Length: 253
Image (cartoon, rainbow, N blue to C red; front, side, top):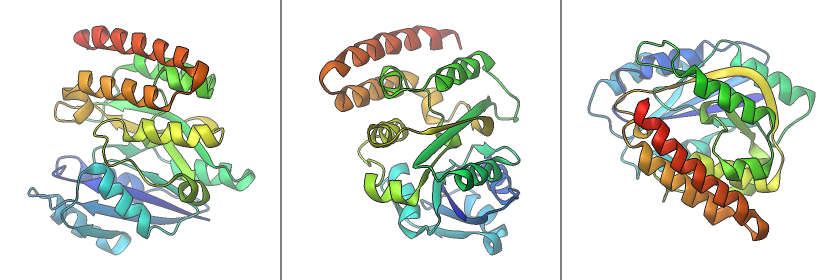
């Protein structure tokens, strides 16, 4: 089987080599297709990408933001399973082999595992948040997903068939395009939860969610509200209070 990984890139020269090497170091019983979509970076990102161009496909051109770049990658991807890894995040060793083995046992529509939070120096941070998300993941239901965004984007994958039926990311969303996609997938199919750590999400001062967490949490709430139907409005009401709690919590993080 083939796994296609897309990395959208824009001025992440500080981190992108760690991202690229974490993907290219993946080994196992699968074929890797790695596509890096750069948005005309003005730092050294393109030079770093060029160093690895014999092992990946890449392009650098103007885009309309992160979601547009990811969609470009998906349109040219040929894998049986798709995922994206932002240019400051990393996979843990064996992540893609774990996904391939799960797909080999029973082809899934989508799956997700666990994800560490790391800082600029690859040190794990905010372990309490990770433990909370793992606990939520073990109890996955669509209603629970409407109440809070706990599915970790770097550790989530979906089949080509699911992508064909669900479509690409919503380019109108700035923060919650991943959460919107999980809700779109979750409305159609139950995911497979893999109780292993597959990736690392990097939290740093220049990342979107770190510097603008209030806006991110609010857009996420609005996304849940847009997807809710009928009695699911109660779940969205719970999501609103979760948003309020997050805004209070992140003052101290």
